[in-house]
Every structure is written in C-alpha cells, then in structure tokens.
Length: 110
Image 1 (cartoon, rainbow, N blue to C red):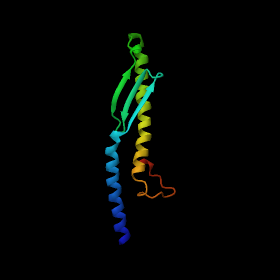
Image 2: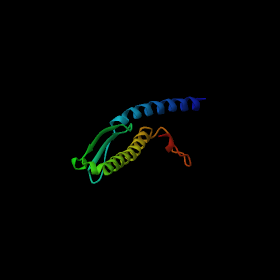
Image 3: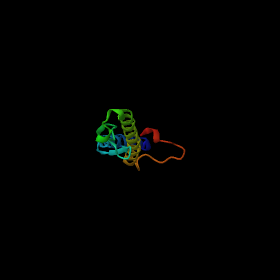
Image 4: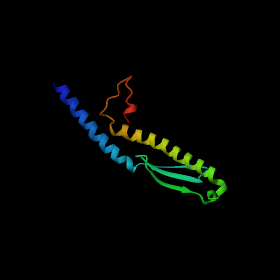
C-alpha cells in the first residue's frame, strides 16, 4: 500500500513539474535563418512565431517565389529546432522522477 501511495505522489510531482516546464516553453526562443540570413524567424517553445525579418533585397516583385520559399524554409527550420529544445527541456524537468526503464520509450510523452 505504501508503494502505491509513493507512486501516486510521484505522479502528482511529475504533473506539477510538467505544467511548470510547459509554461516555461514560452521563454525558449529559437532564431533560424534561410538564404544565408536573407530571412530570419524567431519562434518560441510554444511554436509561436515571434518575429520575421526579410532582407530588403527580396522585396522585388520578381523575387516573390524565392521570398516565399525562404520564409517557409526559415520557419520550418525553426520549428524543428523548437521541437528538439522543447523535448530536451521537458525531459530535463522530469529527470530523476520518471525512471529510465529499458525498452520503455517515453519520448512520445513530450
């Protein structure tokens, strides 16, 4: 019975730490670029686009397709980086609480 109570306490502790860690995701900011810096995107850990900078050299009408491609590339690159950083952050928040059980992949929890 004591083990069950202990386990329930751990579950509550994990829930609290995960909630706090998820709130902290807004503080993780990734800046990614494409086109050798012609387009830069800032994205936070909650996957919110915070800023988008486009070099003035891309403002010509004939560069619209290139501009679109570079914007998409910068945002997609940033989203991938945010996924990695967010996962690391959430795993670190629960380190020592969730046991490392061989063969049990908890990566999809984060």
